[in-house]
Image (cartoon, rainbow, N blue to C red; front, side):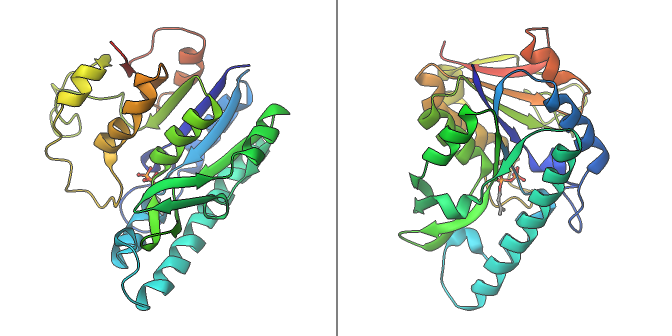
Length: 261
Ligand code: IPE
């Protein structure tokens, strides 16, 4: 059966600004949709307000420099765990056989890039129809002590290593636009981007957020290798009910597809 990796972006599962808050009603709808899909699914969730603000406060993404950061690492892990539990609770309500993974227990990075990922438990559990769930996380780093790996990096890494067919980035916008749709109402959605288009793209005006990982440009950078080796990457809106179901049924859905050529 086809393996699909779905990244649940922080913007779709949490209110991104302010104190940590989970979008429970929206996620419940998504969980219901996931329960009806006939695919082997692996889920990776982002952090939103549960991760980025604390990580930034303690400069966790810059690696270890002083012992004051350790408290911040613990607090970030605690907060991310509480988000994972909320996601699990909703998935369990809808009978999705979710199996949580702590990324930090099965992944190691070197200078912010994943170098060692224990794939075996993912393979075994996917094979019997469980739905592994992991998240962007603070993990051990051979060079910098600790680092933050984005759910985007994890999603694409697992896709390559597990031979997944598709990576879907679920966001709160329809895909990649020719300008920022949250600022410019006439922004146009780009439905297909080839590798040549992607390499030429420059991303301006994205650095004003509280994110310690990459935003939309991060998704693209992470995806390049996977797309060039024949994988499909889709960036789509999970705010729209049934969007995922339609996409997986092959119906027309507004989204951006990253394709080789
Ligand atoms: C970030 O994960 C993880 C932490 C800050 C601990 P992501 O980069 O995948 O999170 P979102 O989707 O941007 O919120």
